[in-house]
Image 1 (spheres, rainbow, N blue to C red):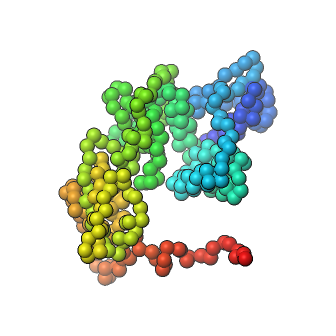
Image 2 (cartoon, helix red, strand yellow):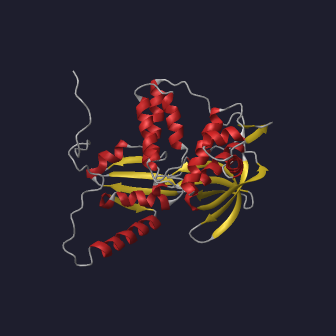
Image 3 (cartoon, rainbow, N blue to C red):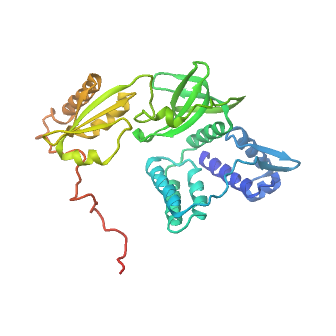
Length: 350
């Protein structure tokens, strides 16, 4: 029933979008396939729960000007840039939010070939993901409040306790770690910037109070030193040693703005960075396996050592046979950098 309700509200949003000069509740009910009373309830839900800026002129209901974005005029390289971002979202998202697929369908309609079918494919991929009506509702409230500079009351379920807070939404940031989404907001009660995982927000309700964002605040500057989305007032100097077998892979990427790479005589690479938190980078370090050694800070080295000991207790100390031969972290399974698991769906032309 929740999925049906979300689908119905999304359909009614599209109907309202298709009638920029307004639509009556009778017309909305007719096109949406619901009763007039249901259409009235849905208009209230779109305004209160979703945060859609609705107003009426006589019997006509319409969305406030400026809510829908105009169609862009893009060059082919610009359109390809959007396609790359869309592909990243499709790989990152683990659930359907109801809005991103519609956005890419609309963008696809005004894109040049061959970007148009690629964006349409992203929309299909996003629609095929599991539906989470609660997540879609929370994201819609947060997005609307962020755009309108409106205070939000959230009920948040952290790993330690559940609490109710009023916050000022400043940004919504995806993170590759755990495929999470994060709300970065100002907490006026604590007079500090806070980061909340959206998936842990139990409820979100817009408040009547509005706020003004500081003119000198930039989310890019706020996160410029972060490894992911976590920041702090101090930094840790992280020194890592990478095995010679993965040296070329390490050189291929710019992992952090502060990074410094040094080539050693034995073929290894030293990577030094300044990061505000070791928690996020720890997962990345562990992903390199034995190809990466933490030199400092000592706390990160201890965390990795404890994890290595726990993995040995899980896999090696149970007597289930010889220690497995693990491929060096970062090494390609197939020769070269092209996967050979399946044939490429292309036709060779002259």
